[in-house]
Length: 419
Image (cartoon, rainbow, N blue to C red; front, top):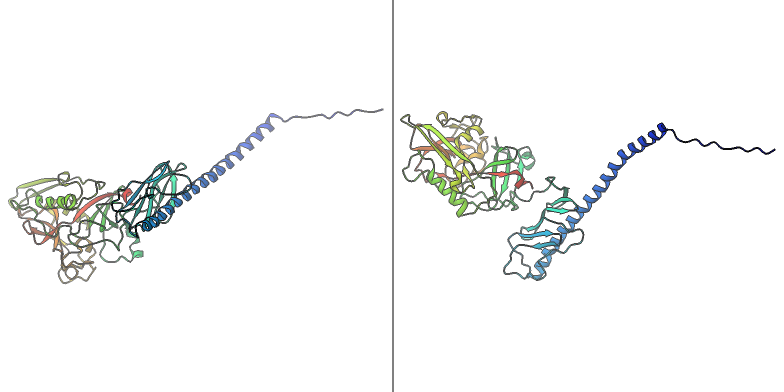
């Protein structure tokens, strides 16, 4: 007798199904982000490769340009604006043959926006804000870096060179730099210009090109810095009535001329605010004036004696309580300081005889003994505050045109230095 056997099929329970779903969900949570990260890194790497390709095409452009123009290349910056159609030359050139030299020839993904620049007589190629595959990319002359759209990519330095205080020793910067947060090499007429220690000028009377600046204030967004030399060699404080009751009117006019007429400083510089001086004159009469720097070009300003006091650690806001004195009590004046010994030497660098008299870092044979501040002197209507070559907070009569120059202070967005 033949017996039939039937297989009994049993299905999954609800709990087993839920367990499987949970396991699959956990696997997805772990695996999907990893896969997405891999894909994102691949896209980012491809974007950086595209940027490097664009940079190489700019270098090839320089070679072709020179071959086509008997070895010549423009001194000025060449800018290429990039769109989905490619990168096209926007700079106007005269005296050169630019046939077939109006675009960059490169393979790969075209950026939808951004710029490519060729500077330093064709020796340097940089790129900024190239939008490729959803990334914002830059090229600093050596490597490409990309970040998500809207993300700040801080790997490139297109303009001024910034050396922060903690890096002074590594850059062999020694001497009197107390209170200096950073040294910046910057061209105030063009914040994108390539500046460094080698191409910067510290000559009295120079107001254009790459120059050396000392940062003494950092509010997180902006650097406030003073130049290391005078852009005007000799200036009256106020020529007309020759008193201090209205402030440095003549000096401010000279400052405006030097930064908006003799040279055109960049409009991207942060506009200085106002300065108000309050003090009692020799007769005990309260005096006051306000400087509105918008009336003087909104490019630069003079440092105030109150700021000097803050820098050297005395921190007063009262003009009536400020008196002449050594910036550094460990270096006591004329003939008693060694070069670089005064820890605030940077404030009076590049003045005459400051090396021996005040222990400065570097002196000038063509400069004055000091430079004007924006502040009147309390107790004497014919004097105003200066920073003098012998390392003192001092006063000078307002008609001392042959003693004092003008040393500008500017404020710059840090994002304009570290793009």
